[in-house]
Image (tube, rainbow, N blue to C red):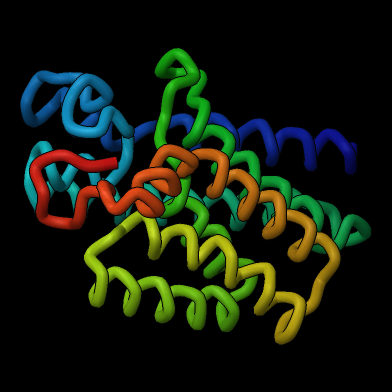
Length: 204
């Protein structure tokens, strides 16, 4: 029963994460598949560029919210003797769902907003500091991808320094790898100086 509850929490979190709000909102607002417009990414930044700030910010908030909800599901259903593991794995499952959603042919976004929701809930102070660094980077450079990568990189570093927990550290390192893999084309563009900045009509 203990293991079953943990499995239910992880599966439920994956299904929740698979709700791609950028795809849903784009279909409702404009009748389009957001993955066929702009950068082709099913995320908040591309939604801002294709649909405008209002829908884009709504997607951002909802993507964060599903990351928070997944961790809470893990804490609610997770047995005490598994410690942080159920909550951490539930958060990871939501991010996997966002990136590879079962409802949308496994083609989703890059998972940064959902990662923010997960990490803020699991490790508030490290996530807050990493978030400030990311926001400052975006404000200065207008490269959302750079800010996203900095957030992903600083979270495990700060967890190791401030809020050490083996489950958190391992999952945050895995999420960092996820972020860099999902942003590999952005990294190439950043190096080449061809990455689109926030406010451009198209971007990655």
